[in-house]
Image (tube, rainbow, N blue to C red):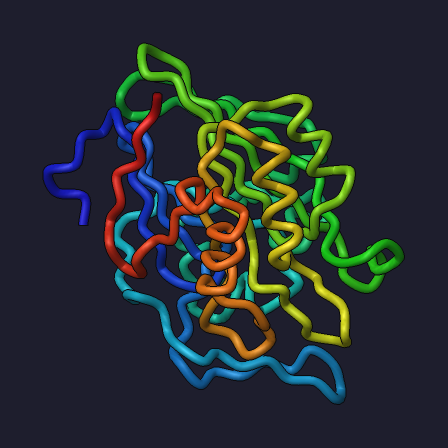
Length: 264
């Protein structure tokens, strides 16, 4: 999967749901690994079940060096096969609460805490935890802690990217925009509604607000297909961005296909 790819570049491979493989300077990172097959179901309480409507682009994601896990308490962000992969990798960055539950060397970062990571190509990457709110105000206790991540890579080809994690648009995202100016923003979209008539991830309005909040960034949606509780797909985002004449800023990744991301 990585053959003939220039390690100094950033390559993104969309696996499905919230799961993305990033290849940065020879380091291979996976976000929120969900690798179970189509038809797998999970109970989220005594009455509600969520199901996988489609499987991952591939079950063989190759060698993974690092897991960026927004949270561990929801199966559409860490399913059975994803959890097995995470424990094999042995290097995970997540929330402090998730790290305490997962053990296995997981590193928990609170918002704005960061860690330096040496890349195989000799450069250094800074991973910073960012705030996230997994639903409307007042749902924090029900939903649990979530984190996003900003990755900054130094060197002659400096770049940065923001992975929102499961969040709606709120003041925490605005604060990220005050502190960072990423080249790419990976939003967890889909307007997920697992427990009631309210979103726990970004809907179209949130995605547009995020785009205008980060005016230089290309917006790449994840978490918009493959699960029964997602209510908005990529086509809805594409239509909305086109109507507002910002369609060129939206990038829909083809599932399973390596995409080289360029920087100005």
